[in-house]
Length: 205
Image (cartoon, rainbow, N blue to C red):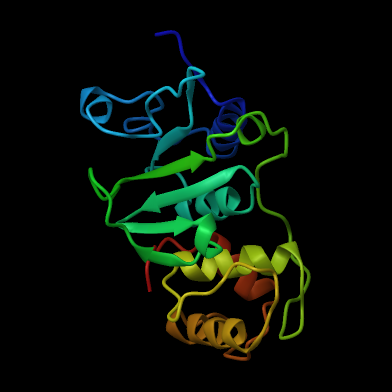
């Protein structure tokens, strides 16, 4: 069967490869292997011949940033990494992955919605620079912050909704304390906390 990767995922792949040009491609993948073909999988071509999933090997990539970039894109349906799933159905809160197949311990799986609109979206992938964020802040930067906190294991998990409320502040304080972020534990996301979230190599809290 003739197939193609969803154009939106092709654009994501291009963004990832440009941002981390030296990453190891060993477990990168698009179309499914025999194991995928034996079951339902977004790695298998749809009736339109489109593959709606992509995997990225973790080596050489800051995986929290990759995952947050995927969360922020309107085409993304769900993400799986290190046995954890982040689904658009749950506003990208984290939950234990219970699906078939491996838990994606060394690579990240990203699926887009199986719609023509999602597959062909031209919305850019990536993360943004943040202003100072604190309780009461709203917008895209807050959504990115909440996504990072979920990837680092915020408990309870946060809804990635762009509203910096008490639960988000609690999660920020917990992160600042856990990783001894310069500047202290104040629940405010300034340059030190932003930099730490975007560079920390510890995946889970």
